[in-house]
Image (cartoon, rainbow, N blue to C red; front, side, top):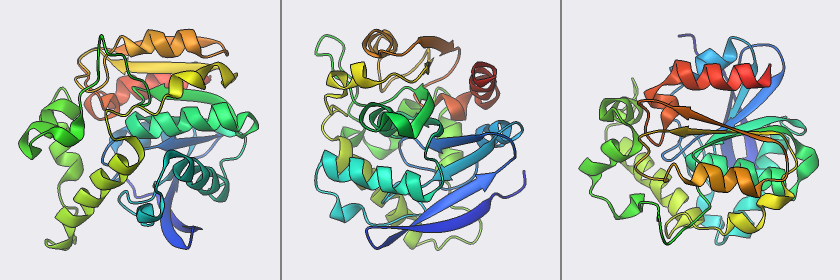
Amino acid sequence: MSEPQTLTVDVNGFPCRVWRKGSGPVLGWLAGFGGLPRWTPFLDRLAEKRSVIVPSLPGFPGATGHTLLDNHLDWIVAVRGLLAKAGLDGADLGGASVGGSFAAEMAAIFPASVKRLVLLAPFGLFDEKDPPTDPWAQRNDNVAGLMCADPEKWKSLVAPPEGANSIEWPIEMTRAAEAAARAFWPLGNTQLAKRLPLIEAPTLIVWGDQDRIQPPSYAKTFASGIKGKTIIKTIPKAGHLADLDQPDAVAEAILDWLG
């Protein structure tokens, strides 16, 4: 698995990493809970047919600046600026988990900025009859089993990469969880449901059938709320971060849909 090209852009005076790999039409991807400490097999599969651009959200691995973002509007403005500087204006855009929620917000609030939308178990909704799991209230040794059907997939993602500082690495992972909490705590509820009717972009909704964070029933809520044409794809044997559990199946679903 070859390494992607790495660029850095400025958001609010802080650096944010942007990865790019592949050729063909551009597809932006926003990472899920915990961010992306390393390039993954899922992204490699997408890059076989697409120019995949992966900006790191503030505070996630490869980026800083999350401490300036005090409310959801701060985050929306920062993500909008990040995507523009990463060259993603008007491109296809997707995201998982917390990244999927921001992708949906971009399509709702800045409709001209998103051509087609891919949402993989996004945060943003809350149903008291079927509430999501609060990932910030978990013991650390329980997180892997909540993020993936195969906990080893999560552990591999967050394991220190070669050359990482053994003291700094846990701090970076904690910072990523803190950044997500600043945007989505408690329970990931940003009242995104109110803005779903503003989304006119054709949308693919992907959900792991064993998601223990965001209830799979939320897929239908997203589909019924979005104004644009939607398709739901369920991924067997996959948890919340289905792109880690089943990288080939998720990538194939996305690439087939994009055409």
